[in-house]
Length: 176
Image 1 (cartoon, one colour):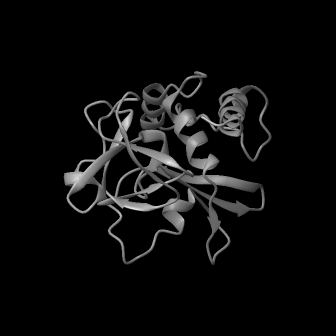
Image 2 (cartoon, rainbow, N blue to C red):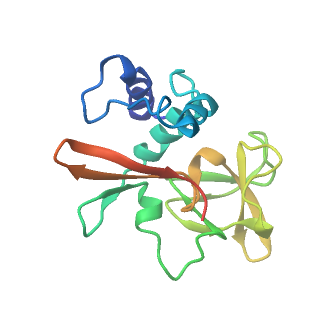
Image 3 (cartoon, rainbow, N blue to C red):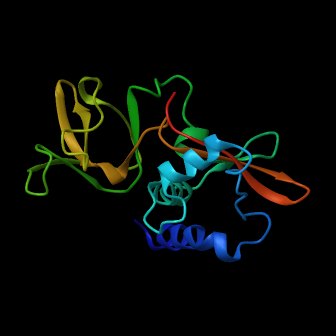
């Protein structure tokens, strides 16, 4: 994780103690039992919560403003080309990302990719080892890239709107 994402994740994780009203979480648990279950499932107050890690990674990729003025992250979702199947492809978010013959750091490097949209090999993004994503590298040839560089446009994404009280995250979701 890049330093800025780590700082953001730590900042957000610490937010319940000191956050400004525009970032302060609202404890909906007493009024809505489903929110209490959500908070418990995601371990929102834990520094290592998957939610904070995924939100940090999502925001670290940047985003765009839509015509209504909302901010949508990551850019691989908000600027995905309509002509390319979002479920069957991933964005390679990095320069000179190594493509390996096997899902291992010891795997032979068979090429490099930079900020490319690649088809997912045989309809399966992740290898059995979730650290690697399998992509079609050339006609009839697949390879593996480190998962941290392969971002699905239908992976986690965040939506923010600006109101009288400031910016507010209104949605954080994954899937199509």
